[in-house]
Length: 247
Image 1 (cartoon, rainbow, N blue to C red):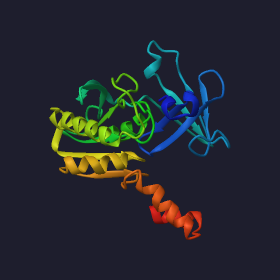
Image 2 (image 1 turned 120 degrees about the vertical axis):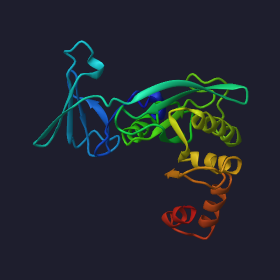
Image 3 (image 1 turned 180 degrees about the vertical axis):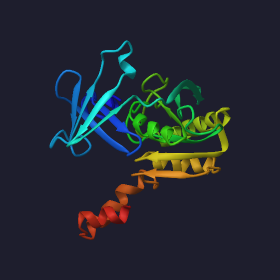
Image 4 (image 1 turned 30 degrees about the vertical axis):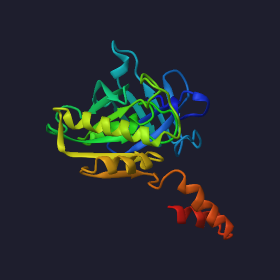
């Protein structure tokens, strides 16, 4: 996927993931139809992996890819996850959403499901897509959406609109539970980064979750974190200790 939304200056950056192992890397051009990946996220060097796409067929989007790591070589295909575009109505706005479903045969309907709440910034569905695909390949349906005022969603984006984001999340959760492909008794929430604050507000309004995943997220109010940090600095605490205290 192109995770352009999360890159500085809205630069394009391709990402590939291998569902069985959880391998996720950013890809860097290394020739025609060939890309290389480094040892970590956003790290082109030292090169560890090379992926070369076979675009000779009639449908290049689903043709095979050769993946080389050291002396090991693998051949794979695009993961057959299914995607359904939908609309979420919230506060008189229309949020552009997407339901990511497991491939046929991976799990039985109705599926357990998770609503993904994005982190800080004017993010669209492009940013969490690689994580959504991982869930789908494990048999879990996922709802992702463009934030208000971003992508194809209406409205105006404001970085501090946590209450509005919580209302949007509640509307999205209701849409997810109502889907016939989803088991409404097995629906959870995942908050990424500042999405954890949104999740905390959402839980006050709608606490009936089957599970919660906190992905490097904070659940204290946004205003409270700088106060905690300031207290630590005033006590001459080391930076690492301040961050541990906040965590």
